[in-house]
Every structure is written in structure tokens, then in C-alpha cells.
Length: 535
Image 1 (cartoon, one colour):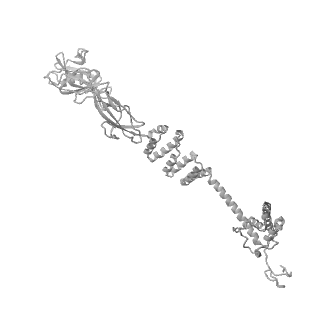
Image 2 (cartoon, rainbow, N blue to C red):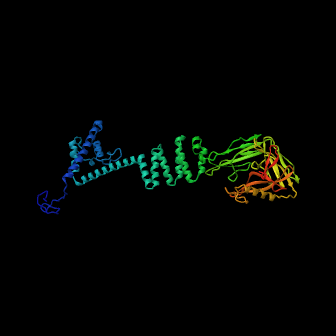
Image 3 (cartoon, rainbow, N blue to C red):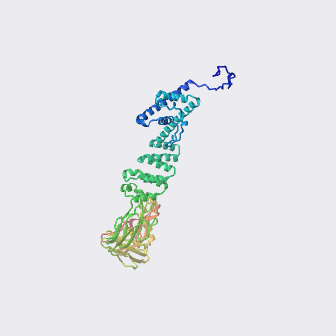
């Protein structure tokens, strides 16, 4: 290294020239390529400044001055300015640069401006480093702004939010999926599929109430479009076990198609086939429900519930006053409101049967005959119970029962479905001792029936079907002044233990065991017997 003043060689590391005493300034090496790039960048900046200056001069030449040029130059070089309007008022003359630096012609001159910038920034490494830092900061700011703009565009994109929601749902993070999908629905509120998916995510995240509120807000009044929405609401309530809410929603809606589509959830009051009021005929009252379920009712005005009489067939309202109350319970256990109807029935009852002979004690059996009112059938019992249409149907004279008996009769109008008062008679048949007893007569018919075949033994077991035949002596009859025991044939079902009459009736003479046969009734309603021995 040589001294810049006297040219004497100076040892490395020395800061003073030993010959002339000149202070030595060590300046680090600077790469020409970096310097060229910096100068090129500055030249470009200078061109921009120059163009801005020219535009400013053309816009208003009178207002152009050194200070406006200085302000424009500083603004383009990103040098912060004092926001105060009169920023130059307090500047002293000595603070201003020398006249050559602010020469207007040199500033306006492009080459001069370039020369000024080179001169200003070419004085040291620090200025160049500052420029590099400034350039990097500008690029970083531009990148950050671009990133924020890109992020904002994504955040406000329906498809981006929708896809992010699906990604979160696939990983099981339904809280995050809901967050994205809620924003997607805000961006595209008309997207029905997105709202349905949001409701599914709500349910998976145990937020059923949010799902229901969302779905209720989607009901538009269009039956076809609302069908799926209602179905999803009802599915959620069904899984929650809250069927009563479904019933309430359907009761509140006026959409007939929706009510019909989901009628299985409704519990509507039963419908009555006959309006309440006064009638002169027996009413066959029918009750119907709107869907699958059960109807319960009362006839005395008491409140019905699931323990009341279940409706299975028409209710016959005969003479009298009735307060019919009914409820419907659907297949989900929902109970309808109670419906009440009042009826007054005033129907002319059929006459009670007239039975002959009247009650009394008899030494010889007599035929029991009943006068049948017009348009009626006669039903009777021999065990003391009140007869119904399921009891014995009277078709002709009845043989008087053995011993003491009580017979009850009713007239029944098929047209009006109404019973008469009950006619009751009591008999006491006291027969004299005869050669043949009632037990002997039953055995005679049993052995005779066994001889005809079909029975395995005299105990009555049948050979072709299960069960057995029984022959019972129950009454007596007088045929042409000869007394006979009357034996009826019964079939006994072993599985049910029920005895039913087969319709065959036999008779055995009380005085001669060989005189027996079947008992018949002629056209004049007189009894006769057919002798099987002579056949």
C-alpha cells in the first residue's frame, strides 16, 4: 500500500505514513458486479423520478420549484416526510444543500439526476447496503400483500370452505368441519346440499338442536321440496325418541300433502260413523283411526285410556242414553285428544216371548212351546244364564228337562239389532219309577252307536279323528202317551275341552229297553221316533 500524499510504501496495518505523517483510511474492496447492479437499479429509479418530475412540470409549471422536486424525489426513494403542511417554513438557509446540488436545470436533466444519484450513493458501502435492505423490504411487503390477497380470496370461496369441511369430516374433526361449512353456507345460502350436509355434521357432533333449527329454516312451503327436509327433521326426532314433537309439527302445518305423507306419526281423534243426536233405530256405531293403532272407548261418559274397552267391532247402541268417549293411540304410543259424542236411542223393543207351559211341577213331560214375534228370533238357555244371539236358537218345541230346570228366552229383532225383555220359566219334572232309568237309556244309545262303527270303544273315542262322542240323557218326552228319555249326542274336543251338540237326538222308552231310535219332529211340530230295531 502506498501513501496517497507522498507515494511512500506503507507497511500493512499502519494507519500513519512514517514519511509525511498522512492518516491512512482503509476502504474495503467492493465487487464491481454488485456495484453495477446497484447503479442499474438506481438509474431505473432515477428514470421514474424524472418522468414524475416532467409530469409535475407539465401539469403546473408555475408551482414547480426546487422543493417540490425534492418532495417528489424523496417520495419515490421511500423517504418518510413530515406530515405537517408547512414543513419547510422552519428550515434555515444554512440547512439547505449547496446551490449546485439543488440546481433546477441539473435536476430536470436526466443525465444530471443520474449523476447526482451516483454521486450520492457512490460515496460509501453503507448507502449501498441500505438500498439493498430497502429493496428486500419492498419485495417482502409486496409478497405479504399478495399472500393476504390470496388468503382472502380463498377464505371467501364457497368451494374452498366446502372442501376444507369435507377434509375435516374425513379426519373425524366435525367441529372444524362445521366451522368451514357454516362459512360456506353463508357464502352460498341457496345451496341446499351444503345445508343438509351441515345438519349431518351437527348430528355427528351431538348438536341435534342446531340441525333441527337449520332444517326448519329451510321449509319453503313447497311440498315437493320440503318433503326431504321434513323427513330429515323427523328422522332426528325419531332417533332422539321424541315422537311427540313430530306429532306437534304435523298438527301445526297446513300442508295437506306433508300431513298425508307422514300420517303414521299423527294421533288424530277417532272418526264416528254416526253424528250425535236422537234416533229411533239402533245405531251400529263405527270408529276409525287415521292410521295404524288402537281405539279405546267408554259408553258411560268416563275418560278413556289404554285400559278402557278396545274397539274391535261396531258398537250397538240400543234404547237409552249414551255418552261415547274415544281416543286413538297410534303405533308409536302417541295418544290423540278425546272425542265425545252423545246419543239418545228410542227404539220400540220387540215383545217378550210367551212360553207354554208356564212354570210349575209336572208328573209327565210336556212340550215347551214359544210364540215367536214377527220379525224376531228366539234364543234360550237351560242353565239359568241370560240368553244372547250366541245361545240356543229356538226352532220348535223343546223337550222338558229332567228334574228341576230354569229356562230363559228373549226375542231379538234382526232389523233393529235389539233384544226384548227376558222371559223366564221354571219346571220341576218328577217322573214315577219306571223299568228303564236315565243312566240305562244313555248306555243303550252308546252301545248302539258303537255297533254302527267309527268308535273304538263304548267310552266314545273316535277312530278317525281325535276326541270322542258323549251321549247324555237330559230331558223326556211324551209320544202317544208313551214316555221316552231323550238322549243328545255331543262331540268333545280334547284340546279345548269344549262340548258341542252334533244335532243327533235319540230316545229310549222308559218301559221297554228294546224300544229306541232317533227322535224327529214332523211338520205339525209333533214329536215321533224312528225304531232302529225294526230297521
